[in-house]
Image 1: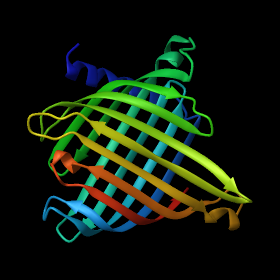
Image 2: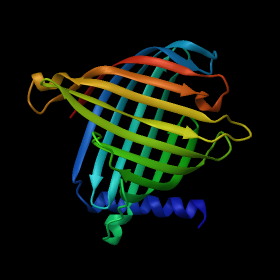
Image 3: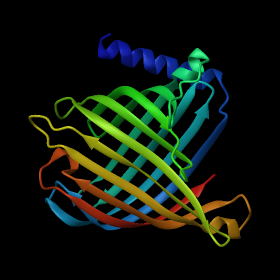
Image 4: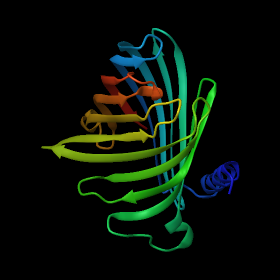
Length: 241
């Protein structure tokens, strides 16, 4: 099957799932970040200030799940908007069979649409939900990427969440790791971004989730540019509606 046929099938199937099935659960949040050590290709420096406002939406559906976000960033060189939309279709739910083997709890068709100023990337592949002790969730997604600005490559994405308590205080560590292969016009990238957060909201009301914390971003060969390495800790505030 050609890529565009696959992408169209995945998009239509995901839209059908979203429009005909009420979410089993869903979450929407807004976050603000500020850091002083962002790596930018504009000056090839690693000490740039940047502010980011992020809107995120996550939903668990009968036949899969969906995650999407929009970033609005501002630094000394530009104001940019970037988004990702990542639907996944559960083969276990579609077939009615348990696709479990060891720590693997489900197998999914995975896709992601990445978009920004004058570019769109389309990723498609296979995903696995896995069970790891102490993790609330963990998933691996393996993609082939059809890119606008560089040659096509492959990507591995690991997504995780680890809630825990110290005394009566609630904390959450979550984030992702992206690794992509090199091409003739782009270096291999490794981007690990994680958030360490304390739930101040529980002291306002039992079900309130207002997090304070930091986001750590370690990005090697950012955007596939050799030597553009980011090592930043940003102040974070995030509210879940």
